Image 1 (cartoon, rainbow, N blue to C red):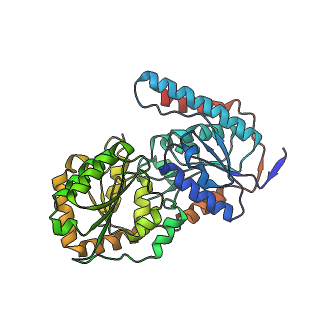
Image 2: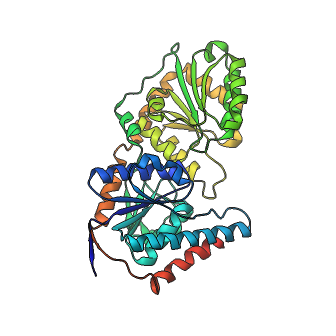
Image 3: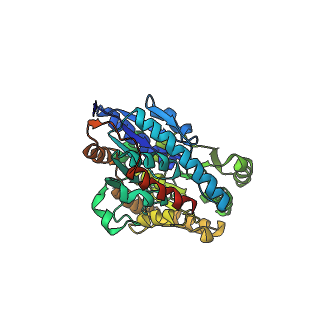
Length: 392
């Protein structure tokens, strides 16, 4: 077979920022090392590709099998179509390695890699292996974990695991060098609220009502930045205005490194990217895990921080305006708690996660690679069960 010198490493991710941001960080690190990089993503992931610069990008079909049986069948069909599209990409451009970042948009390219016998690896952002990564874990050469004791793995696959951390964007990584500026009893207090790349309406309902319950002398100290969905903006703005609280409301926090660098406390969901960014920045947090994931990944993420004293968990059922007001008032009156939690958060931070992940990828990705096979026979047989399990 002909050999391809310096074959590209193909990253596959899509859907939300939680999957795309680590892929972006790895792409930047690999390019800085002189490696060729390409990206396979879906239509939603394509919205994040401007940050990837000149990385060659391929947009394929994907689907999420949430819902009834017909939704599952439609999703399986879309994923199968995406797998064929990814197969064509890999046939035209043999890869040194395909690395997936979880989520259904990554499944087609990972399936195509398995189909063609291309080396494959995966990265898990959460504390528990997600469904797609569980489907393919036994068929990859390496598994990158963001936390110690990654859950959801078969015992036989644990030998493949490398603890890398979850890569964060360069601007966030820079926050690791900044010391937490602990508030005093009478200083201004910077509070940042966000629900991840998709927002979270419960934060827009509970947080403003809680702030309105605080004594005027306490609420007057607050300087709030809050991400809200567009449908919630006017209602939230009205609550803060009536309470006389200074708040900046945005649909997306585009300058997250700057916001985290000056935050005294964050209230957020506990997605993988969120908890990674909080720990790299060394910020204490009140975490409200998304409750509807089958594997409770966000709860596991939050518990990893709370168990080390870096965060306080408030599940949806307990996340009421009165309970939050009480907790905020306690923290504002006892800022030493925040300083201790900030130090614990900083201790958990992994600012070098992109480097560690790139190291693992390069160990698995030869610079010279043979052209892939035809994709018939045994390779195809390994892929069929993946889509049966999605449809089932």
